[in-house]
Structures are given as structure tokens and as C-alpha cells.
Amino acid sequence: MIICHCQSITDHDIRAAVDWMRASDADTVITPGKIYHALGKRADCGGCMPLFLNTMRANENFQVPRRDEVPMLRRPRIIAAE
Image (cartoon, rainbow, N blue to C red; front, side, top):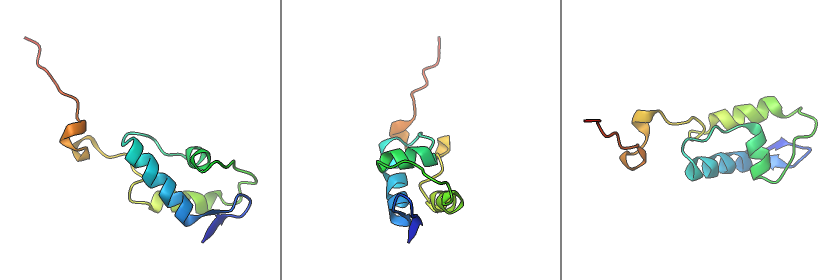
């Protein structure tokens, strides 16, 4: 489904961009601007923003994972001071 008619961005494009950003950096904060940038596009009239945001937020990879959800390999080592 077309989400942004001005830039021809589909719901698939948004989901793919969110998935790619989350896979690249699990801690990144994903914003509409970052999605437009990742797609090589720029926001134009803004009429799509409510649907754009809903599509972003509906992606299961949108939220930054909580610390206890991050795999053990990504957690920083805590060394107790002696």
C-alpha cells in the first residue's frame, strides 16, 4: 500500500527500512526522518505522516529493546572494582 504519494513510499518500504536499521544497530532510535533518509527520500507535504507513523510503530522491530532483551553478546561487561 502506498503510504507517501509524494515520494512513492510503500508500507513495505517502511517496514524494510525499520528492519534494516534495527539489524544494523539494535540501540538506534528510529524516526521518520531516518526512514526517509534510509530510503533516499525527503518528506514533502507531510499529509502522510499519521499513516507513516502508524506503519512505523506497527513494526515489531520498531521499539528499542530493553536491556534484558538484548542478547548476552551485546551486553557490556561489568567488572567489579576491587
